[in-house]
Length: 99
Image 1 (spheres, rainbow, N blue to C red):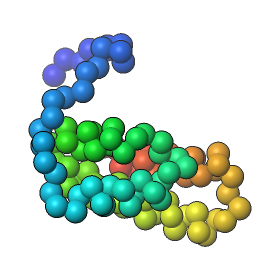
Image 2 (image 1 turned 90 degrees about the vertical axis):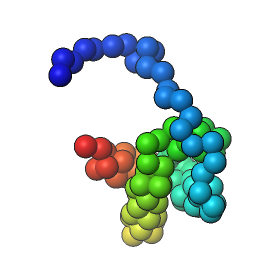
Image 3 (image 1 turned 30 degrees about the vertical axis):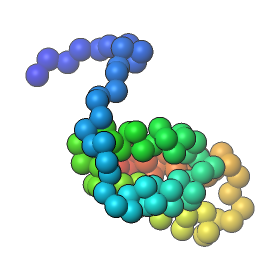
């Protein structure tokens, strides 16, 4: 496979794959968004739209729920963390999910 560098402004989102997400899905999204509110600031609408575009939204949601759970535990274990420290912890958790 040939690799090609492109400008990030040329990247376009894929189309909506799932007009309707499974029952309870949006409630689960809201729960993880509340936990991550200080460090992940995309809107709920943008987040839901991104899930609608995913090939496997349920799998992606499970990943975000796991990130939120680990982040919450890390913050509880480190109550004096500043916002930059919380952002660094979140970035490390997020990078751990990338292949």
